Structure formats: C-alpha cells, structure tokens
Image 1 (cartoon, one colour):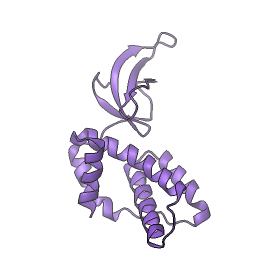
Image 2 (cartoon, one colour):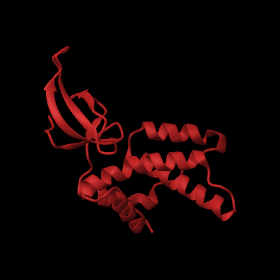
Image 3 (cartoon, helix red, strand yellow):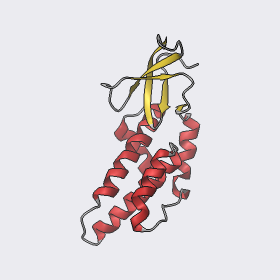
Image 4 (cartoon, one colour):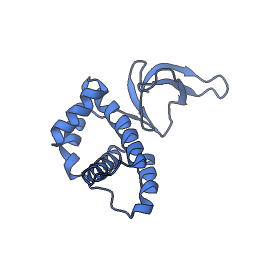
Length: 157
C-alpha cells in the first residue's frame, strides 16, 4: 500500500495521496487523491484500483526522454486521426502520449509552414498529452511544468 504524501498516476493524472482511509459503505481501504494539475479536485479510489500506478523513476524518465526520437508518429488516414488520438489517450502509457505530442506538433508545424492555421483538434490533443506527460516528468525530476517541458524539448532536439 502506498503512503500519504506519495505521488501516483491515476489514469493519466499525477496525484498526491492525502489520505488513506476505510470506506464506511463497503469497508474497503481507499486513497484520497489530489491531482497536481487541479488541486481543487479530490478523488477517492480503492487502493486496489487497476488504474493507479507508481510514477516513473528518475532513471525511467531519462531513458524515456532518450528514446523519444524513436517513438513513431501516428500513421492513419486523416479521417481516423481523432479516433486514434482518443485510443492512445485511453492507453494510459507515456509512449502513447509521446506519439500524440510528436504527431500533433509536426502536423501543426507543417500547417504553419504552408501559411495555414493550426488545427484546433491537433492543438487540443497536443495540450492534453503534454499536460499528462510533463506533469509526471516534473514531479519525478522536481521541476515546474514548464521546466519539464523545456527539459524534454532540449533533449529531443
């Protein structure tokens, strides 16, 4: 069982465990979590929830950032792209988030080079994937969100 004050990932959100208590209805042990991206929220989930995991270690973050360039772009037809973004977000993996970030970033850069407006759809999924991935990296490396984003970008270039 995890401890109060520990950070975990629940689904895709990095959360801090602020309480461990027994649920008075079903007598199961539960965590009360506060997402780092919105401290006004509070989530109560069973300690054995399948969607909770430990954060990456520092070594895992460093290895992941090194491997970022090798993560492939999303390769589907335009009309299937949004469904693929949704599917990847639901996978709850850092590689899936990286695929979304890489694909949406380069699609938007290509649009800008062709004097077109960036895609709202691509931009929305780009921001969601960044939010999930960089919050975890920020907590692990003890950086701000912006510093974590800069760290990844600097190491990927």
